[in-house]
Image (cartoon, rainbow, N blue to C red):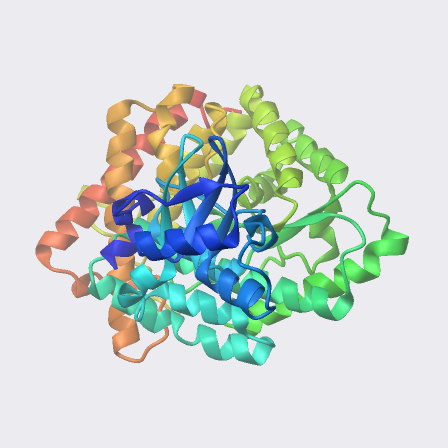
Length: 473
């Protein structure tokens, strides 16, 4: 499990074997034999322009009875998929699973520094989420996806048992959700035909932030190219979105209670219309607008033309950064999520209802930090979506001190770990995981830390509120 979160560079053991792009198949085969490798990079001087593997020689040369003097470019893959050397291993393996490739060149500052070979890491993968992602991308229908995703809760429990960090687990669990979403879109396009105009499928909420755990609903939308015309293209995209949202629900990612999903006509719009919505929300921050921005300021492209979302996010960050009145309203809205501390710093549990005697770790613990990090990011014009990444840049807008940002990072990490361990215990008991913790599940030591965590949130909320004079608007 720790291996999955290490950077790809930590697995590289040798320099890749290179040769000139003008060489023959025989020359490449001799190189593979001499160097004991299964792939060779084709270079045009210092530029990577292709890759040829042993399977290429087998399937494209020998099987077709071609001459050994065949130019290797006729056998190679010339549109090479690459990965930066500082990304976590699990992301690289997700790319390999999605594109069905076994050799992935690793880049550092524009130069190839190694090749990630699926065979060389297979011994570590038999119990990892990567195989689940690979299985998801091979499923022929929704029924297969339903069966594959039944392993997610147990996977979370194994990750927790192996002491994976909350941040790493969030990325891994979210990557599985992304894989399911992409496969549903592929299945829908296979049934409906290619999309008539460009689009990007966008995750919102915890999926966008890569902070999902075992208990989650779906928040998503679509940004369409401005060539979209409802009368010509509306039926297609309605069917596409419905297929995906229904499929996600069937796989356990339940419908959003607020219907913030792409299957809702309201949340499928061309880029220009999305711009108008965000500009309206920012210029007229009434309660509903603030609620919507809290969801849709956390957006990440999952599939399709990511440039559409990139353009929208650049505009939104610019508009929000320059609007002090909007930020003040956003702060006031964020301060409605208060940590559960009563008089004398006592833990405050729910007094009635289904969850009486519990603390909602999500809405009373993590959400207040997520809200603070979002404000910090908008104030500093930071385009990060993940909460910890936002906090790491939180000082850029002057909304929080270096010490305050560090305290919130530690607080988020502690609360997220408490939630994951709580859900792990529920899964092991055969219960459905949730966010409602009974304080007696914790030791006295842990309860004291929980109080300190909530006190830290309250202190930082108060500081931000005073800065913006929240409540006086």
